[in-house]
Length: 67
Image 1 (spheres, rainbow, N blue to C red):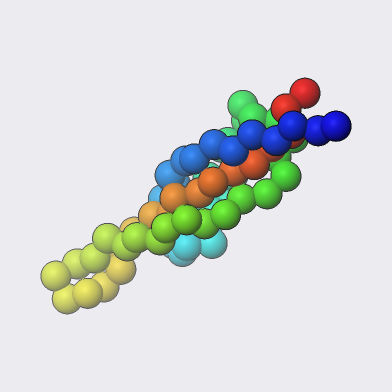
Image 2 (cartoon, rainbow, N blue to C red; image 1 turned 90 degrees about the horizontal axis):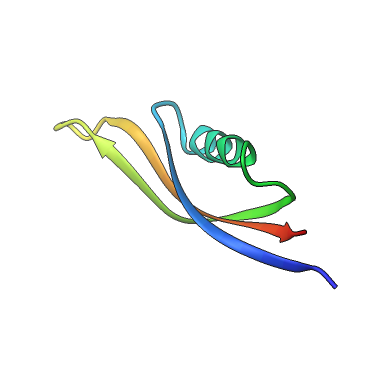
């Protein structure tokens, strides 16, 4: 029987939402092993006064198998 745990983390990117997710999972993978998936809970953007997006931010719930 496998036991899964879920942790929550935030990541950001100046490029795209996809890049924010990928960089967040890559950094998480440095210390968390057996990552099986992630949910994007929330997406936020930082903008200039004219509405131009300057940064993408995501909140992720990452699931992994506990050894």
